[in-house]
Length: 432
Image (cartoon, rainbow, N blue to C red; front, side, top):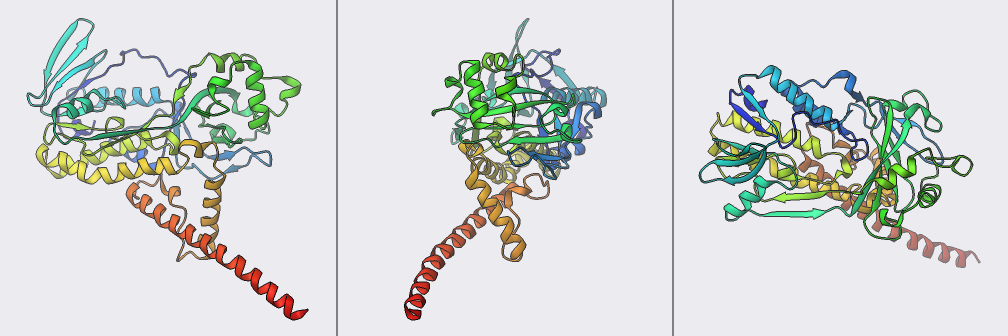
């Protein structure tokens, strides 16, 4: 749509079927869009169907102590990924019927960068298409990225796997959760659990809570060690007791265990780091193909949509000159995508999503110091992740500074405690 707005003629080759069904509740959870993603959609003129997304009113951290609706996650929306995809396609068809053509059930087989041609496979056979610009938005296992890597010297790709796995738990309607109050259906829910288990759930338009149960890939408690309904009951009783507080009396909800056991655990994902996003003047990577990240901070889709907006800005500034626009896009965008990849790993990445007491201690300490000494301690860096006006690279630099500040505080505390103890002993002896 950004390209169509700039009067390009666009052919979209989509591997999915034209009648792709809605996301499966068993393997998919809603996407949470903050201001980064929403700004990109707004600038492209996209409006999500109001009845198919949720404007998040806050978040709830469920603990044995309380489950209170707090203001976090406000100004974000939760939307099913199929709804988002179909909304983009519908908008494109309706607004740009002459500029955008969609072709479904198309698989990219081969890309020839030098000849500027792409070979696709469809049901009726193979066909070749020529292009001036090819945008590779074909995901974490990108065929376009692989083609660039094999055809261009100096192109480098590194991927780092998340060590967590997840399954989807259908907890029923939000209004039926233990202790539910008004607003729970529009809230982002988190169950911190106990090491190494955690669970989180963005709200859904239908009012149901489909939580993401996260376990490590290796260790004493993994999805491989949970094989029976008794195993599931023991897990929730020991690690997530607030989810089913009457578990011993009522047991698990009907079909809950069967649904969980029948699912194949999904991998947490990869960070993808490329040393460039383009070949120079005809091929560019966007989204997960260029810069996939762990899902721990909920930034993957937001970063991808923001990249579309920034690429369109570079293209406009270069007045359509691809030899200028594509390298400029890499130069401007790469520092931020590298930063958000690192941030996703130091945030709730890996086991930090399951065992996050140290992480929460850091947050609490920095929040306290910000209140006491606001000139020296800024608000916690990761709280700005959803701010479209703050580059990811700036957040990363702030996070690094705050790590140094925390180490400094720790050193001071470690130094003061023994000093006070020695002083106390001296005073005590003098007094005696």
